[in-house]
Image 1 (cartoon, rainbow, N blue to C red):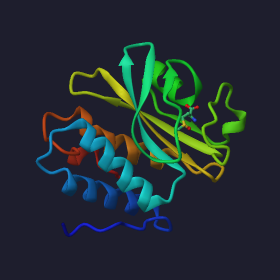
Image 2: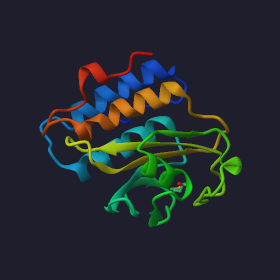
Image 3: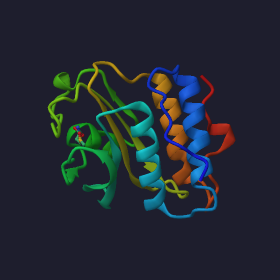
Image 4: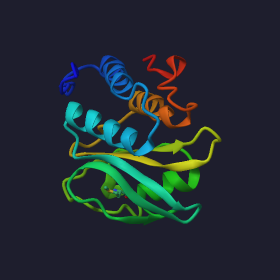
Length: 175
Ligand code: SME
């Protein structure tokens, strides 16, 4: 495979997300497998952006319980109830949550004490059912903003496309 590890840590977000979308689309071309997609997306973003933790929590009891899925980083907690912490809040509301300072977020679940800020994006299937959430933790305060929300929501749109549909061109990052 021609794809190599990307290093996008110092790259402006619009270009970084355009490059990530391109890499993920190429690697997942012709693949219709959610676990493979979760593993690929986690690895691609984690290694390119040098984050602390990058990965998925899957809905195992709708409306009640998330369980960890493919991820990169130190050990994550295994299960999170809907409504608990940042992941549980994103799952309960179906909305992206950005936390500039995790110490100020009520109920934040500390898996790694180095974590300072976080973004959690809900992941939907083609029917609009919640499949899980995509969680990224950074060791920097305020690492995530509306550009990350837009870029990451575009990337996880892979799961709401029809089989093997890839990331919708219309959903890719616009800046
Ligand atoms: N910080 C998260 C818990 C999951 S991990 O950090 C991997 C939260 O409060 O939802």
